[in-house]
Length: 244
Image 1 (cartoon, rainbow, N blue to C red):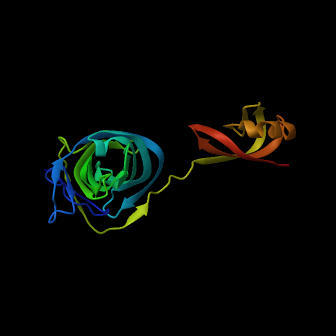
Image 2 (tube, rainbow, N blue to C red):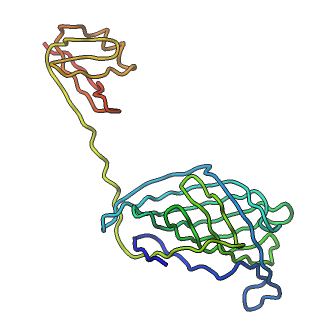
């Protein structure tokens, strides 16, 4: 099993098998194996990134995912997951959160989960309550994961094994944003159309929301000062002033 390091939040280890247990481990009166599968896609996801002290980029997402689960009655119904993922630029990290399965009869099955992320897959442990309020659920969980979806999810029943991560202290600064490339020119307007303007050899695209105003105030051979920013690989006009 591989071992990775990065700064994030903590994680618990996997359980050996998936069982529903009444009244806790010590006072259990029944135990039975249960299994289910699920898939879910994002209904709402927010993403941010930062750079750690060891030079890695962390991508942090918070999302809500909805889909369907099937299997044993306690694990069958519409499923909603709320998940937070912390993944570094090496492709490893953690995904944790909560899940709720809308069981056809009785209370919903609910659980919190903590999983290890390794290059598109998660594996970990889910702990909660089955729809019978007296039944505790402890289940291995695995799935394919992207910030947009959980695919091929399993609760017990041949859950895929996972990796391990080691977490530790560290700072994570917001990722540096590249500064836009700017250009400017002063001189005579040598060309002017609805879509572009040329001043002193610099040609810039005129945005549609500026075109009418520019054509109304300026014409070829007028003197002007233009300011442009590189947008979508094109110099684009952001400001123009008349010069005498």
